[in-house]
Length: 100
Length: 219
Image (cartoon, rainbow over all chains, first blue to last red; front, top):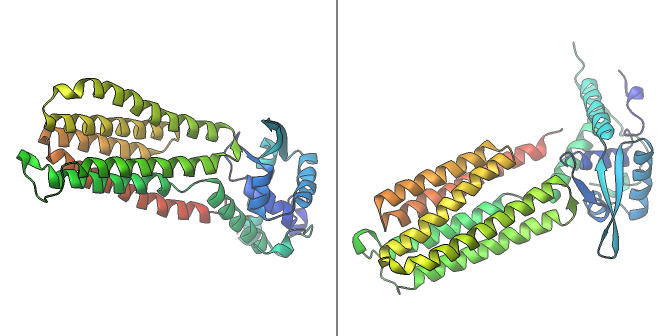
């Protein structure tokens, strides 16, 4: 294993932060887009772009919901995304502390 | 978190940077998404400690008064402190769950309603009969029934969140309640102030330490 083999979708600073933040949610829980944006300190456009890439890879699920008349987007890791994040973390850990 | 990383498509420079980024981001998200349990334990612990403490000092065992104060003061202080605690808990939980959807938010909301409706139902029932009792037993009945409900709900909370220490807290509150009732009016106030209120505060301290460890965990 070397760094070149790390999942390129996750191995980018902004998307790694998105994945790490979403990984704190329990299975089935979703967070609203504005809340995620506030946690990450990203602009809406920037976060949208990264979420789109993660969605294309099947790593996040985006759900549109109406609370009253206001549309809200809910964000969560997909099962596949959680798995990919766990693999990524395990790979990074292996790089830091190579098995002897 | 530095802003120059925000737009960055580039990979973290080293695996150590990746790990640091994951750790910092998880801690930051955890702090914002999950309210500290201290909002739920500390106000209630203090309310019991001070409120029941005043009851003990004013209406001690065998009608003894350890500290002279107006007769209405303990009840008003206890109800006031419980009211403040309720507002703090409700605001903390609404702030946390307003931006979330899914099973956790639902569990939190149902648990909150269980407390509210449980106490409504208990209060209406006791109000109907407590006037028939001598004054000392009235106070004991209200206090003991309320602590019993709180103990049972904490045990149920342990079952909902698979949290053995929350369950243990419920067991502890139930047992000290029984001990206090057996000891009788006056003593019950002392037991609930120290072992009940103190127990809530001690448990809050344990959780605060556990939360700090959890937030520092990489994954």
